[in-house]
Length: 102
Image 1 (cartoon, rainbow, N blue to C red):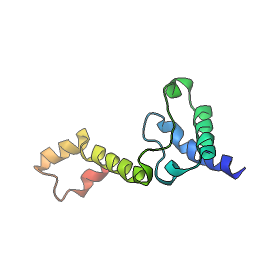
Image 2: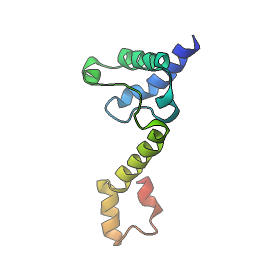
Image 3: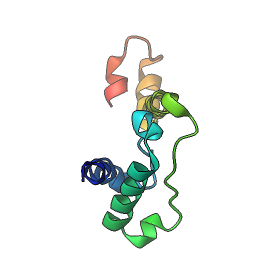
Image 4: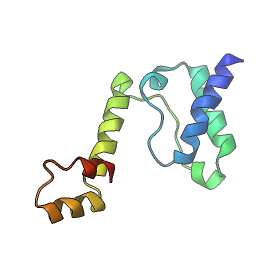
């Protein structure tokens, strides 16, 4: 069924990041059946220890979830130890696009 295939397609990439960011944006607004299919795929493809306390639920952030999650990833990268070390060596981060790809 198409719903199950969609849930498997979303759950498969989400599975290795069971401790990280869950799918968001349009997926966060999906129906209960698609969400159940995503859960099934993640639990089936993950070790029990990795999913013991995992909660897969619809985002309370709505359509802003993807933007907020992406912003968090950017902030994490910009303030990662390696990025800070580059900033300190240069004196300031201005004009250093390579920091964003470190």
